[in-house]
Image (cartoon, rainbow, N blue to C red; front, side, top):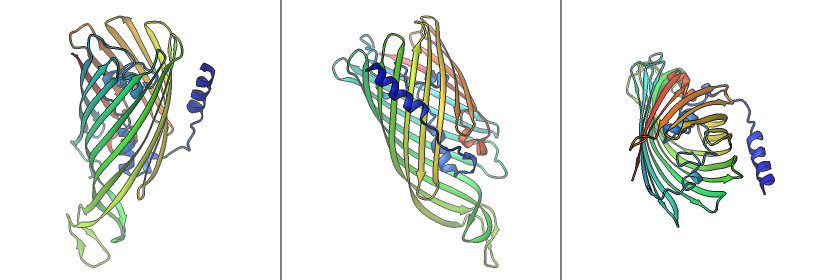
Length: 357
């Protein structure tokens, strides 16, 4: 059984090689959807980045929620604050709350809510972009035996995206400065499996599919010339349309515990996002993460992520468990490269407070 599992994980890890994507030329809506996929509800995951083979509730793999039995603390809540600043003066703020409830017989149930906003102090080339997002998570995990657990999660996104730029339209032979306002509602369903092969090796596989609808309206920003002799005044509704979005994701991870204090983790992830009008994005990411516990109350983490768009994200984090409410802190450099064209390089800081009941 172990050899079969290792063969399957090797196929997933090294068989994902999509063509190189020039993301900077893709529509902002698709690139924003891809960068939202990076968001994590926990600072510990943000610091390490690689999470799929981690047997902890903070993993991105829903199968990890029920791995460790918490006899003294069946209910655990986590409050996370995420703050990012970009080179263009855009601020990214997110507030996330999660709660998990564990039962010995029926597994672990979890709920989470995340609110994300972007604020721009300055506009690039006279234009600005912003996002407002509300996300809801419902998860369930069940440990089947000493070496295997499974999990599932439903993820709902209700977001509004504003994009300002020069666009070609049938109204004029030259690009017009337009403002796109898009309301997006999507639902994603994810499944996960986590297995502990022995005291050193663990593997995790997680994937999901999703779909949604987007309603866009675009208006003129500045006075522009259209085919008629009269200029198109600012604020005129130039048009509106609806679109459908679809997404698929698959990821696999391998973890190796060098000792009780040191763990090394590797993830490979593939994400596909498409819409009827905006096109398609395929992106693969490879993540290496390290976690070290010099003492029982302290954990130090670091990670590096490389994707097929030649973008690199590095991270570091620390957690201290010697308090009634453990705290976790993480930092990411180049945290949202998919929207670097609009925002520039983003520095992200994440702080979590864990509240056991």
